[in-house]
Image (cartoon, rainbow, N blue to C red):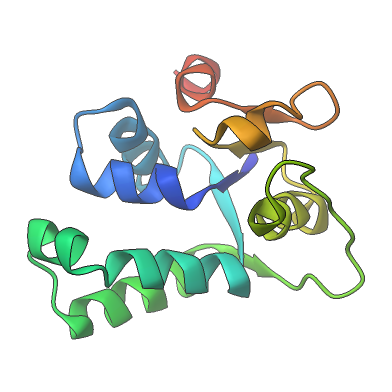
Length: 136
């Protein structure tokens, strides 16, 4: 199974390892499914990890963030988005997340973002809780 994990899932999973997103990150690290990402999604994850509030809470330096992003590039499938058109009507910033799911032909896009979840009737988009039910 291949899944795109939205930035909110990665960050919540890191901050709260016992939470549902934390279970998802642990399941990925345990090899229960493969993660699909794109460079724009990796860039967003890096930016959010560098927010002072987030990096301080995690206790991560710039080097640890860079190392984590390198790990993500190594342990995920990073897909290109050239030629992929995706449109999230309520939030154009989410277009790259949906485009990652389409380009990577992922089985699921896992997100807590309501603008993306609103498209679940058209695309295989699920909440973290729904995804956990599917993998456990």
